[in-house]
Length: 172
Length: 281
Image 1 (cartoon, chains in turn brown, blue):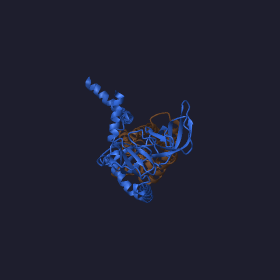
Image 2 (image 1 turned 45 degrees about the horizontal axis):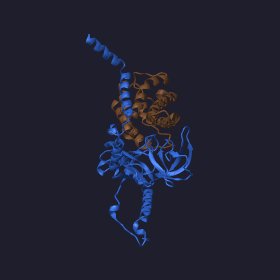
Image 3 (image 1 turned 180 degrees about the vertical axis):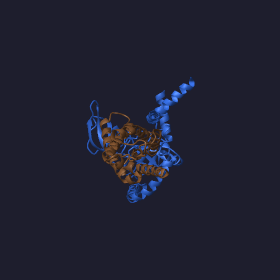
Image 4 (image 1 turned 90 degrees about the vertical axis):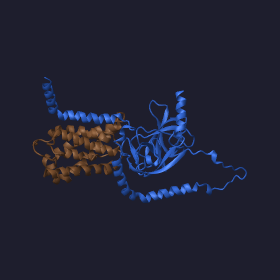
């Protein structure tokens, strides 16, 4: 049981990174949208995952994407900040949750609105760090904010589709 | 006593391990990113590195088939153009004086073909990965051009791959000129539309017209003169400046480039050494 779920996460990680690098990084909509689908992996980690593991695995996930995107350690920094905020955001959005049981974030365990709110807030944090690190200055502030808003929305759409598709395989 | 301190310390670390580890990893990532020395430090984390290069290469060999047809057409078109320029197509009209002495010409630029196996246009700082590297003779600071424009400058090389800073990069500046009157300016990309760039430092006494052609100036160690860049769309004087800044429609569609030429300046080192020694004196 435990083994199988580990394998599923590993498979999910590989598929998401490949999708991110080979498909999402080529997506071009008006030059403003660059969806970061791989954050779905971080969003889907079980609620009771130990903190040190959350941080290490997200940092590594970001670093793998960095290697493929020539982006130094920007994705690693963004993912680390995002996952650091994750427990607090779960407390904020989801009303009752058992922290001592294995709960996988999904529509059925979180509820529709809380799951979307939880994803949206964390995606926004992630993209804010990522896009400001990429541009690395403030003189294109408004344009960068627009990029963040548009990319976050697109990522959120993909993440919601991802949650819907994976609902069955990660709830049991 | 020391044992007690040790125990307290361990207890503290255990209690706050989530925050401490976050600080550690976050700081590491930020420091690495902010050092921003693309040229040396990114050696490990670059798509020129072996594994990611292999993945991109494999993917490229599959997707490459999809664009074979238009690519072939474009290559044929270029062949036709080059063939038409061949010396045998011309007759000598001047019958009185005709000298040809090979030692008059010293080759300055050589070209190598390469394929782009990774490319982006949707970020603020874009890079190109090429399928040739050090073993094929590619070195940092060589230029990358396509049949209709400048694509970038090589900044990092591994044995089999190389990475170029795209023209679509915030740190890229290209010396360009008007082909009609040789006035020079500086071309850079504003970050919005990958078909549009800006040319700045155009003196206000230059008469501009929509559609004026912009080419490379040759005032760089990297690119030859007269490579077509684009045409003027509109221009204005930015607040506080005494020069025109013009919007340029790029001829090159950076999103579809696949076959490129890597330019090597054979006399670049000599020129640079001379210029540097002049400045330091």
